Length: 398
Image (cartoon, rainbow, N blue to C red; front, side, top):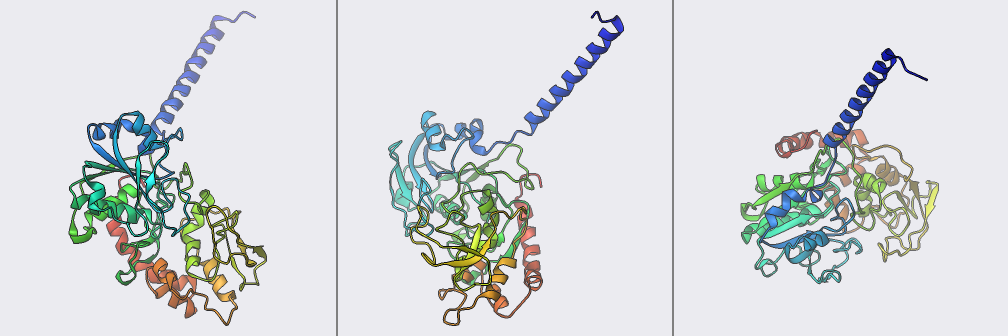
């Protein structure tokens, strides 16, 4: 078929049109390309040149091709002095609360210093000869998750020893909102060092800026602190993690449910440690009104799980399809009301629940029969006051 001049002109115009559309789409895609700070080496490698560097890292310290940051830095001739490992260890295999030993990374031969157990804050001897501590650990944006405490102690030790801290920023799976009860001074611990709510709505890089800016380090010292930002990060968008941040947060679902279910860790109710669904189920032998059943058993990430070997009745939330942007107290209050064991209190005797909640107020509210609405109302003023602080440290689009 021979096209007329008019048809040829039309085809040419259409080709130009669709080519321009394709080009615009590719340009927009390039503009919106997301990258963690670890995948922006052009920003941080120059800062490490000719420096003696300590890396604070674990199994989540990955580039987009799943290469570990430590391996990448070794390849790029960065002078690494040692590795600081947080709770769960450098490879992320230790149970929650399990003592993590120092040692040597078998792949690189680099010494590993544990920052968990009795040595949560780096000692001066571990910092000797270092110029920079490079921190790259995936946080989950929840107060009682200990990586923000590890960052705080690193910043404090660095400030005291005139060492710079550089944070490679990563997404907060619970960014863009704040929720939960506030930490009170009397209940501060490694699972809650600062007066912030359970969900604080900042990336770990932003959080460190808040710690510095609000003078929360001991003796009001201030760390020399730099954040390498992510590319095209939006605080209201949800980003998956490259590797599980700890053994019992194996996927995005468990991370999404974690702020709501972790309160159970201070009760006689299991959160599924020792099952295939940790932090996606809950139950106990004394909540028999629930239909779902499971039995915790030893696993690699829970060597002696709570309620080990006991049949538990509860709820399976692994198919819960809501993207939680607030704490869900329904499950906690339901299990409390259903709990039937006259020999044993619902809350653990050590009152670990109060440390998780930040005070004894939530426990007393539950005992007093307060509704979820009443409990939430009691958080309102604290959340409003914290928001004034938080706004000062937000560095990404909301």
